[in-house]
Image: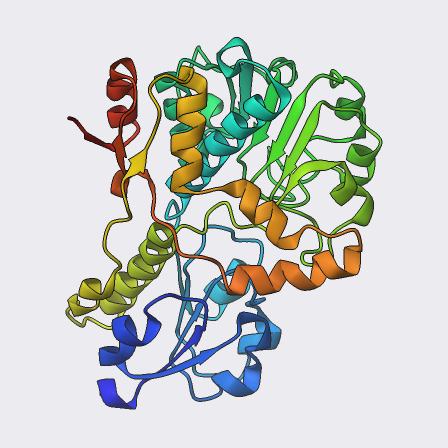
Length: 376
């Protein structure tokens, strides 16, 4: 039976052939190009974020399993899937650590660029789920004071340390980590709307590494800030030219693109499909993962903030991601947006990185953050 099954996958799913091939015939296609015709005789569909999964795509096909190897859900019509008895699995949390590391690195780079001490700033985290909670923990380890806001969690848990949205928006740095939702008790679409943006202090730093649409982009363009760090945009890859010009760092929705995050998403969906088809997992593909990177060497004579910036940037450099799409002409930016996502450089998360030469009083922090310390 296995040999007769057909699985269509986004070709950006890493190790797709190696991981899924024992389950059936594998067909990989660019996510934006997957069509109903490709799925007529398919049994399973595995996507990332660029395939709109809905009735128009799946009607009159035999697909009974849909897996998404990313955490966003706004490209999936879950109600239609449920109504048509199609099993859906989403790799929630797979890229949470990658995004949290990305934001921390951005903030240390920005602190050095603009000449401020990050530990003197407050960090408002809007959405304290998979990503936000990891970011809050890293900030705590690094001695950065946080203001945490998450109404759905606050409604269901005893969280006296959480604050309301207006309080969180008084932070020196505000970063968003909510899903994009349009209804329910706490919709996140335009959560930071024109009215709330009017109250933003012009010395505020705003980060969006969650989803385009959480911030009203039209109003954001008109809002003075100290800096905008933007990874997520409405209407990607056709991003807003005026908003792009306001970004001190603009990246093409790649905060969660570490190899570890991509592999975790693929593996979570793979295991869910094995369970769905009651087929044992096979793990030989794991031997193909790249070995640990080179040691990160740092100068202990530099300030602690500079050492941390150097370490984080050596593990992965968001500034390079900005430069990869940076252009004066917005059409050039837009054309590079998807190309860079599809040809993204491989990098590993902090737990795979070894640090040598850092000040001894940084060792406990670095180990708590996941780094390996190469002691003399």
